[in-house]
Image: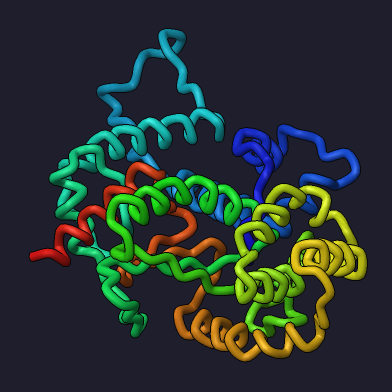
Length: 312
């Protein structure tokens, strides 16, 4: 499963409900390769199944209106979904007042409630120790993944501020998880738009070894819309060309061979952690699932809590 997503949720819902035509099959093709849309479809199907199973006891005879005075109006599927949505809204309002449940990070407005909720989350021992770092953020990324671009750009200012104000205490470690079977046999198939993911991952690693990772990543993100439309040969050539522009003359095959062992180690670690979406973040071992990514405000809040806990 991949998470490349640029279809508005309302359009996806209209497509699933049969209320929107799909000339050329573009929407159907997008849905097949988009984890976010597939999750939305599963949610809608689950709600629909619950609504279908919803039964009401027959009305007692003494409560039935005389003929001509009233009639039962069957609810449409849309009306039932609206009722379910209203119930979900009421539940959302009540969430801050419910006890925190481990394993599902929630963005709760009350800082005290969020703090309690965060401390109850399960943690994975990633076996990482980096100097004096008190908070280690691990991110599994695919450089041709739209959500990876979104959250990288959103979280960068937060991480930069910590590096400025508390140097060395918060560290980001990036792991590769490309959605391409050519280099990552642990994914079910090569997802459309990710034909260049293997080349992108190797290029970033090669650039990182030479102090040019930020420039390489910035170029990939700036050009992601055209790169995901290219064939594997085209995107590989474009990435190699940019890498040569950044680094000068380069024996790409030799450079790729040098970084491949660490790349393969990332894939093995990702398989152990059952990575099934990108980006997937861990903050001191607390997993942030793709469908529950934190806003920059809550990302900052979680790191602050970890720093406070580490100083006790």
